[in-house]
Image (cartoon, rainbow, N blue to C red; front, side):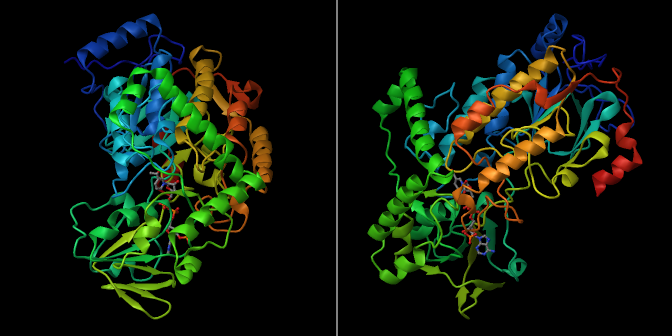
Length: 559
Ligand code: N01
């Protein structure tokens, strides 16, 4: 196969520009022009498109999970083929690839968790198993012919804005440097497992692991298992493994509210309906979206009546499932429902009342080699310890180093708190975009709907670049500050700040979510208002490759 490098010859508007420039100077350690992943047919296609001026700017998408795949599909649809996805893992799927714990289910109705343009007739249940969603995403990657665009095992460690040349230089862990005109970070929110800071954790002598790194080789049967954490994940795990362990000890720091939305099986006939009638699939997606939009999404963003109704239903569910007054009291939260993310799950309360399960709500004092010691002095002997302790939700792309205009780093920009311009961009980081970034609507809602809104918005911005109206798009600092202030003010009405601790809050107690309804988010992101951005041309049209050798930049990258 030919491995002819495509030489970068000019600005993003130049139809003869590169597919992927691998810079040839000292900064780059990869071989020049090794396009071994590209088939000859693809190369011919690419050359044809280059000649026709169809390729457009070089775009790197970081992450091949749900939102990265979506971005890629929409770029392809728009004829913008000059992109790759860099995926640190070995397959697509993001959190659905990483999380394989027993009991993993989508905690919103799965027909709502599909792309609007691609239904999934194969779902077997309303709350589909994680493996079904993973298979769906794998199928989507094949159907939309994205796999050849994905560089698996490529973890991007830094992104530096090469200001003189108006481009981004991305370095991966294997020493390669990629050049991009546009970067779209699609790395997800809940992808960095958080282990608790408990004395003695390292000294535990049995098997221990985080739920997002489940050790399937360990057979839990005949083992004394402990699990720390009773959030959405812990509750699903407990319900699934309780009957498969010799003894299960559940360490609860705070009880969580559970909402009783029933699951249901989809039989073959119902799957066939979805397969053959696209209108029916759309109807299902729409009706669940409406249900969640008009209930949960409103209950948490200021509708006091709906919040009370949600809490009443959750309390009623708990009262019905737990008859023991003492246990009932220990499981009843003392904060408003929705303050922590509402759990939609079944089977947890039943599991807790099994004879081989113990709920422990005394605080953990320390972990010892053969178990956990709680503050009441009890020593809980364990063979296996599972951490269902959540994720570093406020890290976003970090620890990746990102350095923007005038050498300002992302760490400095976000030193007070994370924020974004309309959840997708950042002042001082031109052409660097995010999906599901800070201030995106999260909570009990479909992240796919959120990502679709953001991708549509970004496609308008990318079109400005592709068409040549500008090379660089950078949100105005002053506008972002005003928007950020409004969002912070809007937060005061949400239930998230009503007096509980959750992953919605950062370590300063600030939430970094969208505080209003999803409809408002969609309306505000319908199209970009271009006067919110500085749209400029590159000062230089010739790439040079000295930036990564700059000692100042090198210091920042190693800091
Ligand atoms: O994490 P969490 P999660 N000592 O942060 C406890 C999504 N999700 O993985 O409540 C003792 O909610 C902590 O206690 P407390 C969903 O968005 C989706 O469960 O802080 N305990 C809490 O109980 C969800 O919201 C799906 O007092 C400690 C738990 O660990 C998000 O992921 C399925 C502790 C952490 O709960 C995160 O859920 C599952 C310590 N030192 C999850 N540190 C699907 O849709 C933490 N805890 C498939």
